[in-house]
Length: 490
Image 1: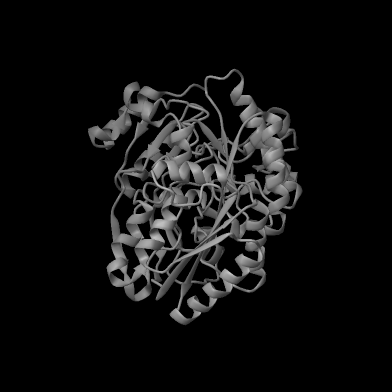
Image 2 (image 1 turned 45 degrees about the horizontal axis):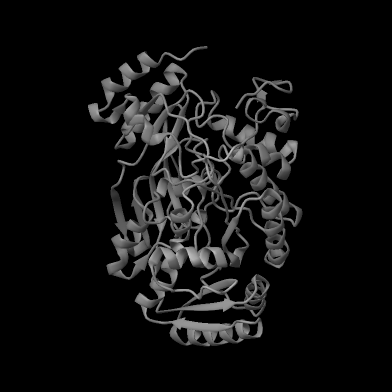
């Protein structure tokens, strides 16, 4: 059934401010992709609401006109989750940037979804608090997007990902209904719909107010920089540190290509250019604990073959050591404007094997790969570098990305650690999950969105998007009947 876009646009303009509705192609081109630029699709229409009431009205109108919608925050996602790859309204939350409430007595803050990640800490830092999840894009990515993707970051090793820091959510469901999941208590007896919503990638609705857990700033922070002649040495250091019972706030590895890209980016040799790998280890907590742990970590790095060690204790120096890691994607992008990143996860013990496989696959596909990753929890971030003008390069890039994820799964890993599935990895979901698993996910999705309006055909494979990859028996209950294979209800 064709969508009546003129009727939807008329109704949207009736209920939203004039500047909140974008229909001109030159305005919409800004939204033709997210941070994963391999595919581009310009949306037919976009809205920029500023309140929960406006979001509710927008989704209610989509429900009335049976028109799908795709939610978008800052557009920094790396899985095509905010890509409008079919006829759908784009709902952009970037104007919802208010800090709604700060409750320091209960270590909580409530924000709108468009609030930038780093703004949360900025709002409470003067009181000695901070917000722990810190994606590398934290100065531009939004809290709403972090919730949608269940984003991680450098400090997720010790402090966990976004779901560990969200207390409650105000959510607009796909029919426009406003509801609430969770509360300010850490544990409650009801079904954890808050947990189900976080990481659902916009397929269950749109969060419009998010209450986050704040942490007290640690008394002491040290950052160690160790450089190695081999990647295996850096991997052994990671294994040794965790096996010794130390729990760093974060452990990150960069390979030689990334090291040189970062040094070129900053115009100085912050990291040793001849190192095969550098390992960053952050330790935080009480002063005596941090000093003892840092000393032990230095010993373990030397035993693993570290050529050089540097320890930062001053906050400015610590930030400087992290700045290169946080800027790694930008630094590589300056050398190669087009790259494709994956974020498979592997057990720490499998890091040397998988990194060797990635190097072999890179040669096999004749595409260079830069490696930078959350070593502490085995979350890889291989950047496949390519020139957009090369013939058939996109197919080769995707084939290499898929092969890397196959290697991750072969050692008991996952296809995504924090970037999400979106459009990019939906056709790989049945590599990791069986038919019953996928059907259960689809049933949950259908309970929230019976009309399949919220970010349709993302995350789960369908025959239209994945062809042979989706040839499973789709068992979805709809009014007591079972849909046959090939009849997609999501």
